[in-house]
Length: 333
Ligand SMILES: [Zn+2]
Figure 1 (cartoon, helix red, strand yellow):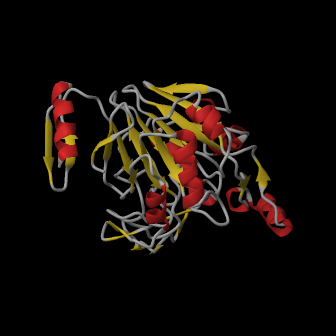
Figure 2 (figure 1 turned 120 degrees about the vertical axis):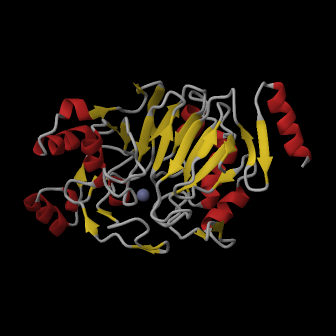
Figure 3 (figure 1 turned 180 degrees about the horizontal axis):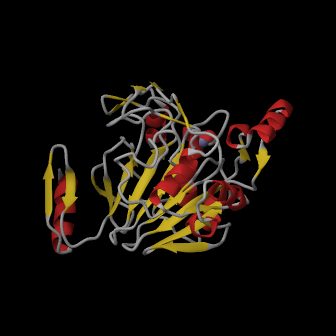
């Protein structure tokens, strides 16, 4: 309560109107531009095993979709609204999108119904083309996607934007930078034409498209978000993401064995390397919630406990969180 009063007093001093209630937390309703972040998961109000997709909305109205994966139900998913750019960390099926749900909330959170096959095009390409929103990709993924767009009679120059490590591009007033991720990035055969797919599958190989990546997004209110992608611990999280970009918010993969950082490693990245003011857990590979409540024995709960220097927010599908320029969630968390 003391904390809440102090926050309210600070906000009033800063010229904002603050309301609070038992379920709302503290809400700054005027005078401070916010970035809205909405998770698009498989089940409304929950955080489910394949949830990765987030929509970021800058105060200027720019809307950016990150890693649509399997849980965005194609370009006509009513949750998308207008989309100005689509970011992809890497080409694995749970990010590029090999399968999607036939309808909202299909299946159960622990085992969503992904019975609609969208290969070889991918959910990512279908959404980019359906929304006429450029893809932003690193490595050597651009030529792979340009070929897909060309085959679907789209304009590859307009729809595919290359962004390699160190470079940045603007989408509206949002700066998008590419940062390293340490992971794999082979195109699964299902996304390739049949003859190539069969040959590669028979040899147990994927197709090369360069390294995977993560992103840093700097919004017009100052919020600077690090999107880890799928990665292990890597020195750039300290030297580049914190040192250069000064990220004040993190979307962190916590999936663990055998693919990426688990709760302990992800907590180290947050506590000792990036040092943000808040965190959104991502890619938990588990049904982390039941009826919107975090399961106490979940990987996500272990991560939340291990992060000592910032609040960890659970991305409940469809629930919009609002962040100020300092990287703090001020509503919806
Ligand atoms: Zn993944």
